[in-house]
Each structure stands twice: as C-alpha cells, then as structure tokens.
Amino acid sequence: MKNQKHEQDTICALATPPGSAAIAVIRVSGPDTFLILEKIFKPKNKQVNISKSPAYKIYFGTIGDERELIDEVLLSIFKNPNSYTGEDAVEISCHGSEYIQQKIIESLIDHGARLANPGEFTMRAFVNGKFDLSQAEAVADLIASNSKSSHDLALEQMRGGFSSKIKELRQQLLDFVSLIELELDFSEEDVEFADRKQLFDLLDTLKQELKKLVDSFKLGNVLKRGIPVAIIGKPNVGKSTLLNAILNEEKAIVSEIPGTTRDVIEDTIIIDGYSFRFIDTAGLRHSGDTIETMGIERTREKIAQASIILYICDISECTIDGLDEILAEFKEYINHKSKRFILIGNKIDKLEEMPKKFKELVDLETIFVSAKRKENISLITDSLLKSVKKQKVSDRTIVSNTRHYEALKKALESVQNVDKGLKDGLPSDLVTIDIRQALHYLGSITGEISTDEILGNIFGKFCIGK
Image 1: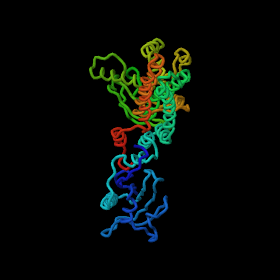
Image 2: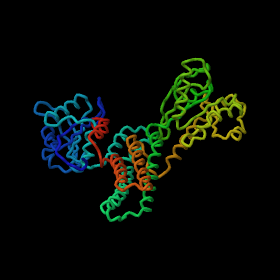
Image 3: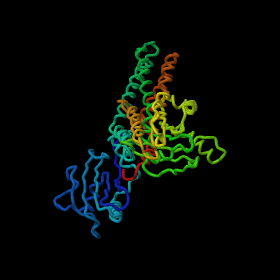
Image 4: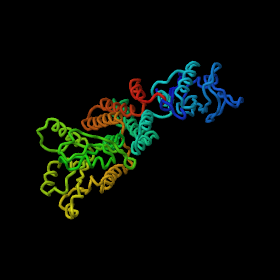
C-alpha cells in the first residue's frame, strides 16, 4: 500500500481544537485543493494565482462567495510532494469564532471537498511515503504527550530512530532467508551457501537485539503513561499527608483516625519533565471491616504494579524489630530488579534529634521527612528523578507502543524457533517458515506489511484534523 500514489478526493477539517479562540486553522489536502480555494478565496493582491504560486507562501485575503463574506484570512500554500500529506495542501488561518469555522468548512464542502475522517491527513502522509507506520503512530503520541519523557519518546520515534532499528533487523533477516532459500534451489546438489557458524552468530545477535527491545517496553510504557509510585504503610503513619505534600494540594483526606483511606487514591504530577502517578493506598493491617479489607487487597495489587514503592513509617514509634518485619514481608519487592523500595521515616517533627545510626542498621534507602511540615519532601522527588534518569541514560531504543511490543515478542519467538530448528536439523524449507513469520511481524511495525484493518484501527484513534 505504501508509496502507491493514487487519485483521491480532497479533504478538509478543523486542525485546531473546537470552540472559540483567537484564531483557528482549517486544513485542506488533495488534488483539487487549489481549484476549490480559487473559488472561495480572494487574495488582497489581485495578481496572485494560487495554483501557480510557489510553495511555502502565505497570502492575505478574504474568504466567502458571491452571497456573503465570511472572514479575512491567511492562506498558507504547500505543494506536492513537499507537504505533510505529500499532496497539494493549504492551511486557512481564520478568526476563532465557531460560526466562522463552520461557515468556511461548509463552503469548502459546497465547492467539492469533503470532511476528513479521523487521522486521514496522517494516513495520506503514510500512503504517500512521507514516513512509515511507526512514525505515523508517533505523531499521535506526540500530540498526546504531557511530559518531557513522553514528548522525547514520541519525538525520537517520529524522527525515525525506532524505525531505523527495525529496518536494520529486518534487513539482517532478509539476508539470512536469502541464503537459506538459495540452498533450497540447489537442494538436489546438497550445497550449503550459508556458513552455519555465521548463521548462528547472526541469530544470536537478532535474539539479543529483539530481547532488548522487548525488555525496554516496561520502561517505555511508564515513561509514556507516568511512573507508578505506590505509597504504602500501616494506618495513620502519614501516607495521605505525604501525598498532599508531594502534590502540594489537599488531594487525600487526612485524619487522626486509623483506616481513613479505604480505597486507592491516585494523582499525577510532572517533576522535572517526568510524569509520576502517585498512589495513596489503604493502611496495611488486619481488619474486620469488609470495605477496609477490600481497600487493603487493592493496595497489594497496586504494590505489585508499581515501579517505585515508598514505605512510610512513623519514625517516632518505629523500632528495628518492627523494620525487620517490614523487610521480611516485602522482601520480594525489595530485591526485585525492576522495582525500587524506599523507606520513608515520617514525623521527624516529633523527634528531639535525628536517629544517627538508623541508616546503618537498615540496609535500605531511607529518607527522613515531616510530611506535616513539608520538610525534606524535595529529597524524595530528587531520589525519584535520579532513578528514572539512571534507567533512561542509554543509547538504546526504547519501545513504548503496545502494538510494537506484541509484534516484537512474536518476532523474537519466531527467531528462537529458527535457532532451534537449525540446531535440531530441521529441513531448510521448514526453517524459512519461521523466518518469514519474523519478517512479517517486523514489517507490520513499520508498515511494509499492513492491512486495512490495522490501518483503520491505528488512524481511527487520531483526531479528525490530523
């Protein structure tokens, strides 16, 4: 489908958010773009001919028809193939009145355009070879990004960093299958064109690279959607107060009564460009209250899902024996390679002096705070940032798209089957089936292999003007 240019109708849509604003932008793209605009746009300079105008020019004029003047606008000219869609296109900058927006779109439709479908401008860019499918998906991610981390991930993918890696792996597989299939052509002569050691070395490289990409999804997903941070501890140790202090707002109800928080409370905050999803949980204790017990069960679910766990204890009442119990209960999370477990000693405002040997006795990252007075809260946020930046400091490609993750997992499985098949002495024609499967999954990421169903599902999630 890609790179096949074909005649299409001309589409139009509002490219800015709906509603009143200072200005609005209406986008038009397709073969009849300039013919339609010449019917409704009157340039201030009468010598201007839109169809013959050079690209990247902006003209001031009025838009309307013989019956009424709609607005004074600026018209930006883009000519194929050097436009976003690869087609002739214009962008109309008008005043942001909803009435004006609607009247201009109605006029465009009356003169031969039609309203664009969701994502149709980007779909045309993909069809016309402006970028591949993974880059097109990154456009939607870029629009939806709400933090530096999600913005950087989308921008890197849109600029082709991820695509280049996938194309490189796919080319290696193509070279591999070419050698195997060449042997099949000469099977009766029992000739081996492919050096088996080189093939196994190549398979090892492919497995390692694919596994790195698959493993990177967990980090990519949390950077894109927000890093989940679970705030846990026994009742009345200051979990909700700490959440309020970090968010700098009264998000959670604070009370001296143990068990006030009976359900999970979540909120997101951007810290130095990174999105963190803080989860205030029900206090961990044995309770006969049915509702509180359900809250505690949800707490344990959130602990399992969190990337970072902040265990809060009341430092004015906490003992070393009590901490040993904590360490034993949460041992699987403390030693988990993909989680960070941080001990927060709260209520230092109740102490006459700081516990000097506490950190030496507890082999765990520990931060002392007063959530009530908002003391040392920055030490927590600094620690959170440090862990994220440490994970991200790498030149590796990070996967953040679920569709890509699933395709990569299947490609890795196919490559592993190829490796096993060769080692088990399977005939080459059977081995090539798994190689072709791996090629299919990698090709589905960048769009070398695609179906209308896949494309419809991807572009249908875009906004209409994109």
